[in-house]
Length: 417
Ligand code: AMP
Image (spheres, rainbow, N blue to C red):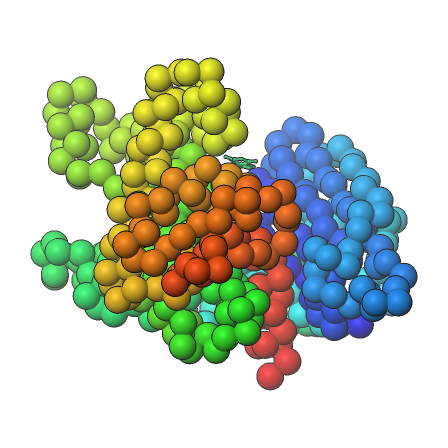
């Protein structure tokens, strides 16, 4: 067994997964939340491996060969991340699997912003910690929270390698023409203003999984990956390298999201500041937390929007059309940037579960050889699957994303060196 522990730390919570990298099966997962509040909460789930069957189901990749065994929840004060890791260790001791019998060989950490400095998974040293801290200038909500998790985890597991896996790293292959904003270049350089892109771990996982599923060399494929969750982004991937992506300096740019506006004329902000007296913080809150589907139709959950559309709610109808319109614009733009595509994939909460979004996003692309098969698109299947017709020149896929597994793979790649 080769267990790797994956940590995704926020400011008042962290999620974890213990994955056996021999089989890529999840052994346990959990959530420690409300850290620093009066009463914290912890949830720990243990997964059991099924018995090997005649067809050899055991040892399949995660999500297929695992099933839920037991879930435990606790409520107790959790003053800081260090205490949170104590709670996590207690949960392993009480619920298993035993970390003493099978200690993790490495710990992988999700880190949101790696700036232009980190372009691959990186062994965490005190200098790397300083760099992650310094990059908090670019991601003030995320990097300090990621670092709090790293520091607490290094105390809890002092003897194993810790590896940082950056959301931005996959997009470090963007050419200057794709990442440069057309503003004063000296000002941009002094503040490191450029497009970075996010969701890179997911875009990398999905584009590689698509190539493996189709049995085609990654290096030969032109791909467009739509990661449509509460946050949403799309990436053009040429030969396994990100060449364009919709998120920019921050995760605010690009597609219409649950609560974020995506692309907007920046002059709207000048106008609101002048006319409405809104401050920078007001505008930040407006565009990041009160826009997107929430701002347009009152809910950030696409299931609510769909239900409202079916009731004939005109706000929801418009919101849905705005969402689809933006998807189409990016599909067309990335077909142009790549010079056509071999594969278009959909992933994350909306991408994996909303056939209508997939169908509407691509329905005008018949001229480019994209043809969705209605029955395949609407099939309730859960795994990686083709939803285009056999005649379609572009293969359209649904690919369930697994960012934790990707972090574990990259962590093992670094720790095993
Ligand atoms: P994620 O950020 O990937 O966890 O995605 C969360 C989002 O997925 C939710 O806010 C929902 O809008 C969306 N979602 C989940 N299930 C469905 C579904 N069955 N139909 C449409 N949207 C869904």
